[in-house]
Length: 207
Image (cartoon, rainbow, N blue to C red; front, side):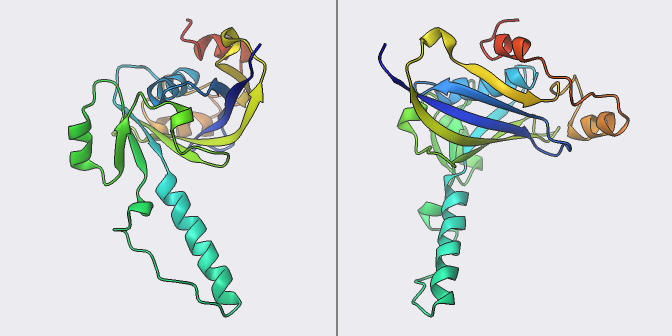
């Protein structure tokens, strides 16, 4: 069996404490569109609403550049010029999702726009890269995705994608993030409720 590159992510639903999260793996041939849909499935979002996926390459570049400048300054070395928001390296990458048009996306985002059919292996993603999944602008749902590692494995196509671990049951039909926070505060959500078998069906789109 030929070895394949497997991308392992940790996905955290932002704004919930204790954390509600999933660790999962997908093939290097996964498209950004497919990745976004799988995030919806494993957190129990419905597919009938607006959603987006952004690769935070600009944010990461800014952090690393500023860290390097501080290190150089601390040793009295030339830290180089400051970067401005107009620097193209400061831009993130927004992927065009199903039913969206690239032209429309470019009208309102300052980010670089690329096709949703871009595959992981074609992207800039590497270990440590982060993505932001957003769902329903009015409900403020956000999921942070961190690419933990890329490994080569002898693995059958039928075994991917797969969920490895996690915590929490998903959004539970909550109207928005504030609604879910209240459900958690009122002890109406059991954050230890995590069904690995069900989620491995969900991530493949099997109900």
